[in-house]
Every structure is written in structure tokens, then in C-alpha cells.
Image (cartoon, rainbow, N blue to C red; front, side, top):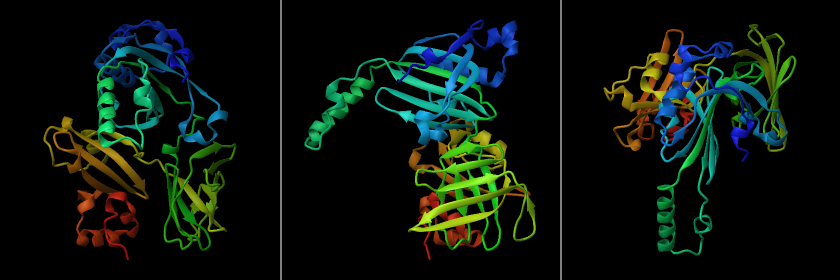
Length: 388
């Protein structure tokens, strides 16, 4: 993997941490300064063991991970922002503990390195970690179908002993995304069918169709191309779609800002779906996570668990229509006791439709949710609800 350091064009290193930045450095005033970003980077850098560099400003390359389908042919975006590096790190804190309310995507993970994208309000942070030691071949090739249970347990122990002693080089770079960089997490539309087509939504690249007899599976688009007057979508299965900057009138004679078309194959028959669309600024993106107070502030959710809110976190599992589901983790309890919540966005604010351990939901609650909106039971933690 190409080392991120070789890609960084460091232009300034006049401050070590946030305090030095605030004390005044004329050159930094020209940068797109965000005190929150610098504060997060400072706090995270101070929590790392090992030798930590100064925080500097510079430019780095970023390849939109939502376009992985064309990985080798993508153009890099040059992003100006902030950077620091740490070496000899034996332990690193969880990035989710510092990037509260951010979307965290683990885009690469392996024996020797890992990469993470952390995004919020068009701010992007890249977190790269590189193992500083060579991995013994005995560990890489140690597992085998021919091994006995005792042999595999011995390899497990060798891995555990190895990772207990290793150190890492870590690089963190943050900057503002350019306007032309379209993120799937921000790609949200409400869809209104024309003619005999029903309504639907797109949330983060996921297309959900409702009450549509042609529907077999929900569609997911992982590649987005921004053109002059339209946005084109596709996925690895050849399913395609477009949203055009053209006004449209739906079957109820209501006007909308955009027109859409989608095509997909259903057992050899080409299905299509078309109509009108409006762009939606959705409050959440899947994989967003943070501390419970952030969720309370954004939704008005009335949490009644652990009084020490610093020990409680949330993780956004899915979004659909005006619904969002999240898992609530109390760090003082086992993860198996994590609770699920289902929130609906209404004109009066967020309403809690369900709260509890979803996989043990009772039949009466299932029926109540089904009657409210039968699509609700498609959320993963409600899959134990009876069907039919």
C-alpha cells in the first residue's frame, strides 16, 4: 500500500497542537479553519502512545470509496486540510469515541494495514494504520483444514501473543470535501410514481419501492456519476438509473423538481420504474455513531437507561422512508443486552415507535408496527416478526 506520507504535500507546520494554532499563525488564517476538527485531532493525537508528530496543514489525495466498482480508473480529489502521524503506537483508542456523530466506514482491513473514512458535514478524515513488524509465515499459513482443534488453538494463541507486542504507524488527515464529490450517504430522494407506478425512496444509494407488485428485491447503487443536468447510477448487477434535473408532475398532479428512471432485470424480464423526485436532506446516514447525548439532541429521543451518558453510545443501523433504526450500547453492560430503537420523523418531531431488544419482540407489538406501516417489519431487528 502506498504510504500516505508520500502523498502529502506539507505546506505548513507552524503549530504543534490546537493551542499553538489559536495563539496565532498568519499563514493558517488562509486555510479553511474548523476549530472542532482541530480539537478532535488534538485530543486523539494526545491519546495515542508512541511518537506523535505535529499537526500540520497540507493536501492529500482521496478516492471516493462509493466508486469502488471503477477503482483503478477513478480520479483523485485533492483535499486541503490537516495531518499528523504517530509511530510506535502500541494501543490506539477507538475513533468512534472521538468522532462523535460522524459516519465511520471501514474501507480496508488486512493483516498489515487498515483504512477508515470518517465523514461529517462534508468534512472527511482518513485514518490509516500500518503494522510495523513482519508477520511470521507460521501465522499467515498456520491454519489448515487438516489441523486438529489443538493445532488451531495453538495458532490462535500465537496470533494473540504476536498482536500483544506489535506496534503501528498511524496517519490521520482531515479536510473539507470538494463540492463535486458526491457521497452516497448524502444521496437521498423521495420518489413519486407516475401513471401506475407507486412511491418509493432512495436513502444512501438504497432504492426502496413500496406497494409495487414488480418489486422482488430492494436495489442498491454503488456507483454514482454526476453529469451536467443529471445523475447516473448503476451497480455491479447491471441495474441502472438516473435522476434528471427536469421538473415533473406525478399522478396526483403534484409538481416536483426532478424526474427519475430505473431499470433492472427480474428473471429475464426488464422492469422499469419512473416518476418524479424531490431531494431530501436526511438527518442520518447508516454507520453514523456517537454518544447518546448527540442522538438525544438530534431527535429528542427520551433515553432512560444509564445515568452516566458518557458510557452510552449509539449506532445508526438503517434508514428508510422517514424511519431510522439505531442500536443503543451501554458500555457498562454486555453487548448482547444492546437495545434497538425505531424512530419516525413526523411534522411534530421524532416519534419513538419501538424500543427494546428487537429479536425478542412480542407478536402484539409486531402486529401494531405492521398496521402502522407494513414496510417497518423489513428492518433487520424485526425479522423475527411473523410473516403472512
